Image (cartoon, rainbow, N blue to C red; front, side, top):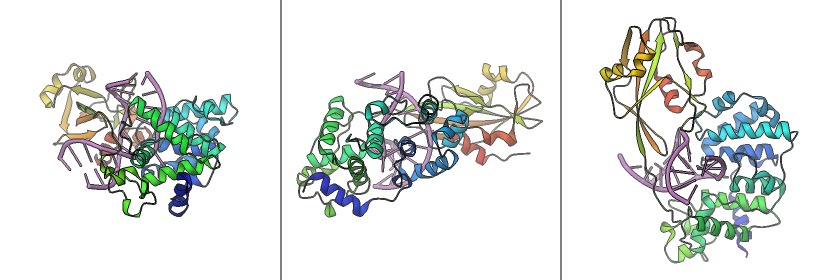
Length: 347
DNA sequence: TAACCGTGGCT
DNA sequence: TAGCCAAGGTT
């Protein structure tokens, strides 16, 4: 039996029932694919339901403010996905009259869509035989064929794409693509794969040579940068505060945060007050207290943020324009969101 | 092209 | 615990 037939046979018996598998509407498939990039199904599912309800068509998404989209994306991470999603929704609605492009070569031109996502949409929605290569596919193919080329090397990316493309079932490419991904997610798992009950056990090179634990091979480990964040949580006597939108290239672009003083190490109150940024912001008298006695370590994929929240009580401030009761309207990072959950509001 | 971009679950 | 990894893409 051919590889794709055996795979689809497994899939029809074991596939998960997921809301985006009830449709071939490219808008919904696109939405689900963007949300699931580097994201587990269990984490993305609620966001998918929320987005499809709030934005049932690409026009609804296009009409929303970017800040609204980011607020709904809050907690899902990789926020450039949300910004690109919104940008592309506006492009499709306004320039293409709402008609989603229907070929791989057109789809991949869209902002936020790369080889994987274009292949997924083209195959699932338009029956085009373009093979997806995601983390699951790398794992299944590297094990089945015993390939030790690093999956994040230039040659590895080309090699696995070519193999995936050679294996695709051209009569049902969308089903094939979802089958190999579900197989990787549920059966040929990173840890403790179910080799004992595997339909490919008699032809899997890694299983035969006892290399399942060694594959796939991945090069290089990321370096984690340590940063020290001091957020100034301002409370004026008329219950207002300050939030700034993060701009520029770094993390959390487009999200809001309290005024931030970044330091080289953990600092105490004396060092905080001596900082020029602090004196610029608060020329008048203030009462300062540290909200978290232990530093909060917020871990991003490339950074560890050692964080202190300083509560600053002061008289009315001209640039403190945000009422505490409206603060939940702003999209904020989980680090800030967790603080707000924990912080006892006085009004 | 290597570095960067979030969050959460698992071992 | 600390590291890995998850339906990747951009610069």
